Amino acid sequence: MPQTGIVIGKESWMLLRDEPLYSARFIDREGTDELALVIRVEVLDWFVEAHPPLTVDLSTWCSAQRKWIVMVSYQLQPSFAGAQGGVFYLNPGQSADEELLRKFLKQETLHVVFLSEDCETHYTVGVTLNPQEQVHWRQLVEEIERTLTGKKRDDENDPDFEAAVQELHYQRSSPSEERKE
Image (cartoon, rainbow, N blue to C red):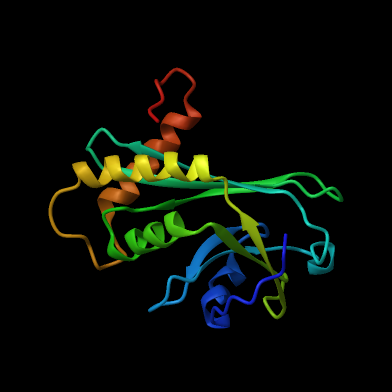
């Protein structure tokens, strides 16, 4: 993974300071198409030049109330430790999340910022995304866009989206429920 020179303000990734280690988020730079996946790690030196394999996936889910969720999952499988990963959710009906999705789907190389536990230092690399997966991800998002009606929300608080995330968690934890994807 080649080191990159992406410039994203430090204040943007400070959001992760109170999150558990290996939490990840998309951080973008307004007014540009720059986007990075920021992952806070316990020992930054482990990731410098280690080139840990990182996989990213995008999937979608629609609640019973027709509220869409875009799930971005990531798996970090370093050779020096056990696999770490997780998922975060984007609301395609919310303007800021829609913009993150637009930027993500345009990337050929995803910039990944490994951030130290204290959020003081970082190491940035580029991960080449699989073009076939990107085509599939674009198709999923286009399907959502065809079904969304009305104006996008500008506020961050969307109780319907939060309820949909809770419904998704319930269905994922209940083996007897039929899953949608």
